[in-house]
Image (cartoon, rainbow, N blue to C red; front, side):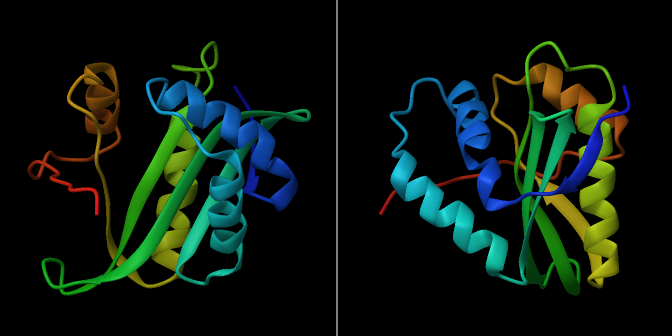
Length: 144
């Protein structure tokens, strides 16, 4: 599939929110708060978001941030979100989004790219391995 991959824009938010609701169906998402975060991320030089488009339909979304990493002794890109709309998976859209993110990270001087994935997303784990990612550990979190 030859989806157009481009930087996200503020007007993409409603379709991004729809994808996020599919990614986290058990979570009651606060659209207004998420829109503020989304819009702010478009303005920050240490964050990047990419949309996969088919005509005017958003079929995939990838968001990453860039940080210093002692582990990698340099700048590292961290993919916060990668989601492809149901029906477009296994068509190359996710690979194109990751390739775009990796290219943007490299252009910004990053020496590595990382992401995490929920335990239950075993299909995604296999996909990440085919994209050259290696399992480095577990992610732990705590809500404050």
